[in-house]
Image (cartoon, rainbow, N blue to C red; front, side, top):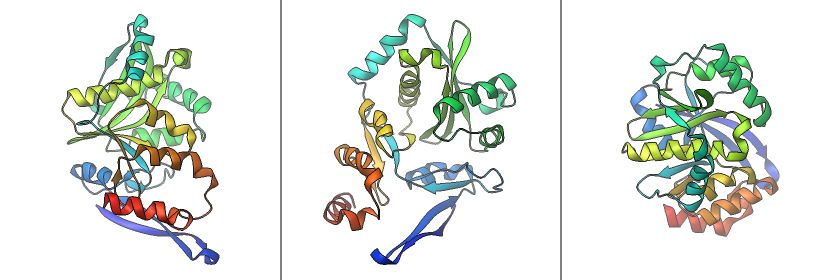
Length: 257
């Protein structure tokens, strides 16, 4: 892998000189290490020739510490009457060019994503070389949900998910995430990565699962109370955390270093 930094915002008044950090994947076997360093796949530029990852506050489940919660059991019970089934085809056995599948994903993204993806970006994502499996969820022989998964070594990334909003009130989205995590644990993986965790809208991930930690820019941090505080105050921050909450930042850096 190759790690590089790109100059970002400058604020001389607070001596803040930001650098965005990225990583280029060179080999498939590097994936567990890339994720363990806090990187996630970048898909906003469909003209990129290199598989690039960005550094962010990401969230992962340590499957050695994971166990079912009452909320997980409630979610499973809530949808059990529909008798959902799961198939896990590999990328080699899945038709990413199927128009019904692509339209399903685009329709969901238009309604649920803060920045809806277009067909070009969806196709770019689906042709990412690191994708290894899809999780397909069915009810009455009807496809109701998909999860794009990157699996390598001990690592699974729950990347993009799309589902039939007709089943939203039955917590289908939560059921899908729990099902993938549960599958990973039963198949002896060590980590499931759940993407970024910013803002209050991300707190459902924090509330629903045990065994979590988040990448704080330096280390994997298990302090969920701190993460909730960060998510609830993200919109208020005007500079980096070190300058805005110095004592708390250093306390946690020393604790987890």
